Image 1 (cartoon, one colour):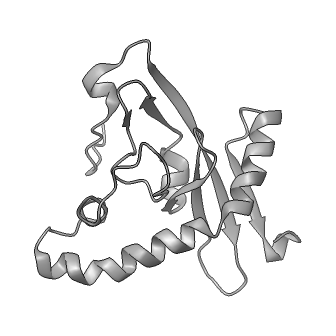
Image 2 (cartoon, rainbow, N blue to C red; image 1 turned 60 degrees about the horizontal axis):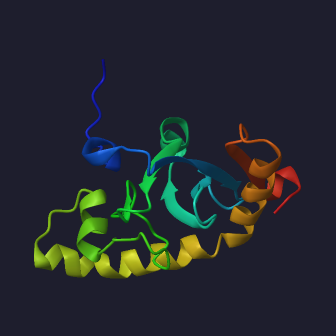
Length: 154
């Protein structure tokens, strides 16, 4: 069995109970003519906002997350890029850690502009998140949507 380098610390490991909900992540894969690789945006199944930027590997491997509303704990709370979510606990330090940057002050300071740009860029994909919500409402098995200039949409 292949073990991932990413340790999945989650609500599930702490206190799964009747208040814990498994929620979907819907992926918007956006193909752009000027880019070799598509932009992959994870849409939160709780607030229906873009909250994660990833690669095709993330699309294949990450399908859901756990949320315990009464405890205020979200499995993705320290990696979420939707800073307006009430369960978001992402800081510059947790963002850096999720990108495997050691937490020396010098490196953290260097990553801050990247963090701010990623947060801004992810938020600009709200129209794709809205479309993901519409599709999911019609078919909860629809977890990956593709958009792009070369596909006539986008």
